[in-house]
Image 1 (cartoon, helix red, strand yellow):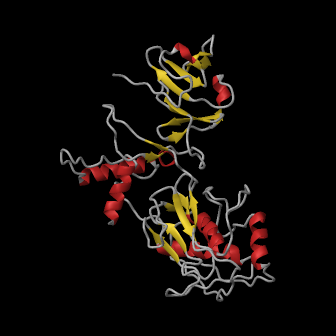
Image 2: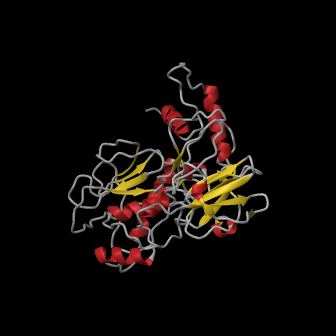
Image 3: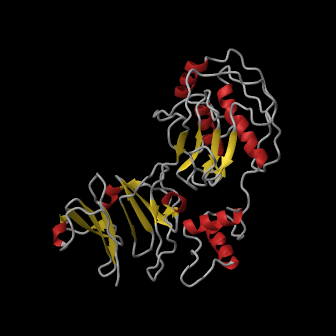
Length: 383
């Protein structure tokens, strides 16, 4: 698939570009493509040029790989030396979908990278990154996937570490966002202990020339390192897949109730400010008086203007007078300008203008004839 086709596929998948219509023969025009890119850039807070530009240059990527490996070599007897050809212990590759290792990538989101454990297998140590991801560096945690953070994690697998659930560990199974400046990053203690158990502690650290690295992507030069001769006493030929853990999707409808795209969009890529580990939401509704969108998950809620979270959120759902434990469904009814919340067999009626619950609630949801006692979700629909 060409770069242009990949770009069209991504914009269509996430609802920015209407899909071609096989019935009418309508095609995606260059004008539509330019408008779609501009809308995407506006939502992302970027200059709306209508032109997509490459984000991270080759030299910046190369320098980030150096610093990510250095995180591990600084505290162990391991040393890494960049070599040409295909005989390296760790082959680094950026690929899309099927890339000939039996573990294809899945496009933006989902699995962002994987690495094979060291051993005798021909893929041992190899580390692959999904080239469909929007890789970033020194950006906020909502602007894409921080390449340095993911690389440190993946190289941990490449030298023998498995996933761990420790809160501060870089080896947690899901992407946790940026970890700070690559020049200053220090491994969490849990990760140091685990890697020391495999390789021991570096007795002395000899100074090494550092490549320059900047947001301007000004061609850093990497130094040479001694050859890595270390091994670990086990073999694995199945990669550790590392995921963003975003399984929450949504579809967008036009005012005429037609799907913008048959492909769903991932919630975290459109609604900026929701937590990184969000895999579902409990309920969503649009406030009638200001058209802001309210998301509910567990005991918290978020308010969005357009697709950006308002300052001060999340907040507890007790603001609404709702009990802890989350809700099952919510919808706004324009006829009485009220919002209804459902939980188990109860429902509440809320006044968004006055920001207070109507008196006399909750009531039994059986008063709504024909609906089940427990809802998965609700929406307002006009025929």
